[in-house]
Image (cartoon, rainbow, N blue to C red; front, side):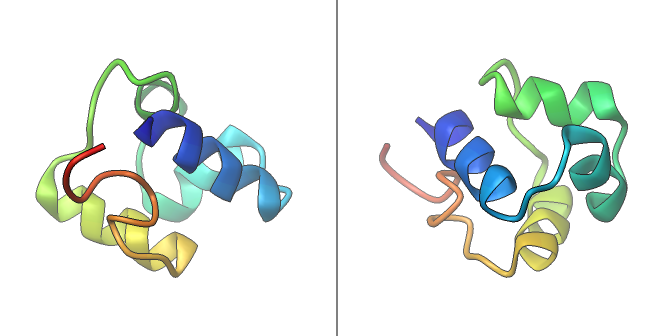
Length: 66
């Protein structure tokens, strides 16, 4: 579920995955893994992700029960 919320948030901003990855400070591969639901961000990176999207971890699907 988180991966769909993250992708939806990215598409709302009209960002490519490469742009989103750059804004968060991670590789395109890492961002792609998050968006495909293969991996979740570490806590410190999750904070950067929330800041980049100006959304909470819960809004991005990473903050509690899915």
